[in-house]
Image 1 (spheres, rainbow, N blue to C red):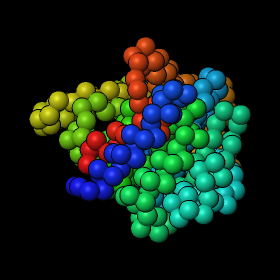
Image 2 (cartoon, rainbow, N blue to C red; image 1 turned 90 degrees about the vertical axis):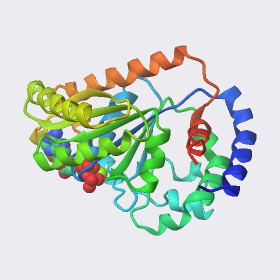
Image 3 (cartoon, helix red, strand yellow; image 1 turned 180 degrees about the vertical axis):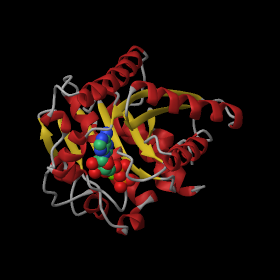
Image 4 (tube, protein in one colour; image 1 turned 90 degrees about the horizontal axis):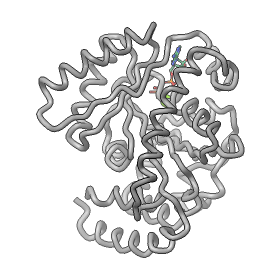
Amino acid sequence: MMGNQAQKLEELVASTTKESVKKSKKTRFVAITSGKGGVGKSTISSNLAYALSQQGLNVGIFDADIGLANLDVMFNVKIKKNILHVLKGEASVADILIPITRNLILIPGESGDEILKYSDMALFERFMQEAQVLDKLDVMIIDTGAGIGEHIQMFLNAADDVIVVTVPDPAAITDAYATIKTIATLRSDIGMIMNQVKSEKEASAVFEKIKKVAKANIKSKLDLKLYGKINADIKVSSSVKQRALFSTLYPNSQVYKDIENIVKIVMSKLERDMLVSSNESGLSGLFKRLIEHF
Ligand SMILES: Nc1ncnc2c1ncn2[C@@H]1O[C@H](COP(=O)(O)OP(=O)(O)OP(=O)(O)O)[C@@H](O)[C@H]1O
Ligand SMILES: [Mg+2]
């Protein structure tokens, strides 16, 4: 697709990865996406990132929702510079990182479409030079936008885990299914989180329905897995309004238990992966995987 550019990029990756491999560990990239907007991606991303950091992991959360970046609101922090400034060369990656807790950092996105002008080579080159700052992260949660644009597809391709969030209303289920169908052309393992459900039972019923339709209609190999559910709870929406995480306001709630169950799944995958040695570490590893798809 990019020809010459891809080759240049490959050389760049090769030269940067060599040193970083030695001193860094592998970061697990978890992309959170959805078909329909407003189903709870940012709420889940921020609370999941926080809960993972409570387990002692170094966690990053990247606001990749181009056009609608709003994780600063979720975490109630003020952002001066974001990823666009890095791409323009006006800031380094280290400059834009916002510490949330001791082991949780936010990588702010840009809530406009100017960033789209800086895609492709510019984005990759600037990132590759800077990416090593982030290599100490154990997990990076990527909050993508809804629907599947070209930019989101890159993340979905390269991530270790892709999780499609849906709520149980028919329109959202239809959009989630369409998204799964598209992602299935990129990869076979896809996770799901059922948000705003009444019970475990409702979550598995909706999941089984989607799985059944997928099995009958999607021809490629598909390993669809339910990561968990989050109950519909006013504590969630009121926390968002208060610009706080429900995980910090209500650590004894059912919804926090729901998040903790999802944490267990992400962590078990992380541990399993640590047993398998890999020479792809940190962001450099992610970008190496990104270019393999050009
Ligand atoms: N489990 C829940 N219970 C109650 N309300 C919820 C729950 N999850 C999310 N919400 C509400 O839904 C709204 C949308 O959530 P959120 O912003 O996380 O969705 P999103 O998928 O990131 O949206 P967008 O596509 O616009 O980025 C939030 O204001 C929140 O109050
Ligand atoms: Mg969002």
